[in-house]
Amino acid sequence: MANAAWRLARRSCPSYLQVLHMNRTAMRASQKDFENAMNQVKLLKKDPGNEVKLKLYALYKQATEGPCNMPKPGVFDLINKAKWDAWNTLGSLPKETARQNYVDLASSLSSSLESSSQVEPGTDRKSTGYETLMVTSEDGITKITLNRPAKKNAINVEMYHEIMRALKAASKDDSSITVLTGNGDYYSSGNDLTNFTDIPPGGVEEKAKNSAILLREFVGCFIDFPKPLIAMVNGPAVGISVTILGLFDAVYASDRATFHTPFSHLGQSPEGCSSYTFLKIMGPAKATEMLVFGKKLTAGEACAQGLVTEVFPDSTFQKEVWTRLKAFAKLPPNAMRISKEVIRNREKEKLHAVNAEECSVLQERWLSDECMNAVVNFLSRKSKL
Ligand SMILES: CCCCCC/C=C/C(=O)SCCNC(=O)CCNC(=O)[C@H](O)C(C)(C)COP(=O)(O)OP(=O)(O)OC[C@H]1O[C@@H](n2cnc3c(N)ncnc32)[C@H](O)[C@@H]1OP(=O)(O)O
Image (cartoon, protein in one colour):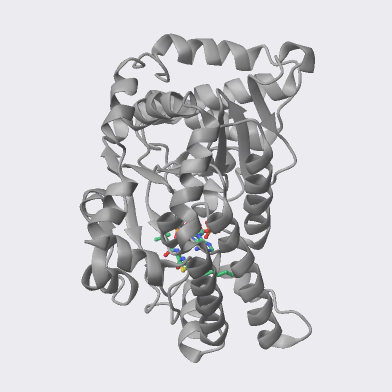
């Protein structure tokens, strides 16, 4: 009974869907939008820098030719190698998604790089000052995009801090809802395993203690986030990027997405309150398959088990979800915030207690041979998930 109620609360309600039907025109990058975006890029007055130019190049190639079809250039052919890497990183990202991402990137560049007087306050703002994220605020929606596509959006220490900063800013800005998504072919490959290699003078014990403190604070920000928080899972999701989904208010997934929590393989144990939320969402048997045996779920399976609200074909994912989000963002913001408070407050104390316990168990796990061997094997290229 409790599981059914929890699942129901996570699905979009019909009255929202009626609103959505009226709003079907937004967020489709047509060929015309793509051409306009290319012109926008040509007209930029300031150089966006090599990293952004490589991203634009890669998205353009992917949108027009599909997955990278160039032979890999030699190591000394530096420029072509950089272009090849940027394109190849997009993997099997569909042409339509690449076209949409190109249009989004071009539009965020023209608003951030051109004269600030061209940007109407409160309509479209891009926050700078993030190394690992792209953060934009438009139409009442703050969008936080994990932006380390070459590393499959693995969450390094800097990204943990930047996500917390972006969430704190989003909780206070004038947007109604907040969205988390990933740039490139992955949503996120979870914790950056190189986080474990930077050992402080106090040794591995100090590292484990600091990591537990960081993790507890990070997950705490999701527990306490006051506005509707929505995940747009654009591709595969691993580890902590999956477990914290149990703390989101809605999870929309592309049919390319997969959900994988291989904690036992990594000598670790569940975090992100999943030892509590996953049991409530999908029941103990299914939660155990994921959290203990590391079963990878397809988007359809994750939806059937209540972790995902709805799945969309990748070719229409961006368009359909953004249409929906724009309609949500027009609902009275205080009503949404208060409804979330009523739903969340009952669970908050419990969630913080679960978070503290999971972090303390993990602090021990990180010092185990099982965990250290798994990290060393990944870093020495001996293993992958
Ligand atoms: C403060 C600490 C808090 C800890 C919280 C606890 C969190 C737990 C977890 O999240 S557990 C999950 C950890 N994640 C993983 O174990 C994933 C490891 N990655 C892989 O198995 C694979 O990379 C893959 C399956 C995700 C993708 O495979 P493939 O498509 O073949 O791509 P590559 O392996 O070539 O990856 C490209 C590039 O990205 C680097 N990379 C990918 N994932 C991670 C990662 N999690 N950590 C660090 N680096 C990652 C990979 O090394 C490649 O880099 P390179 O091009 O070689 O420089």
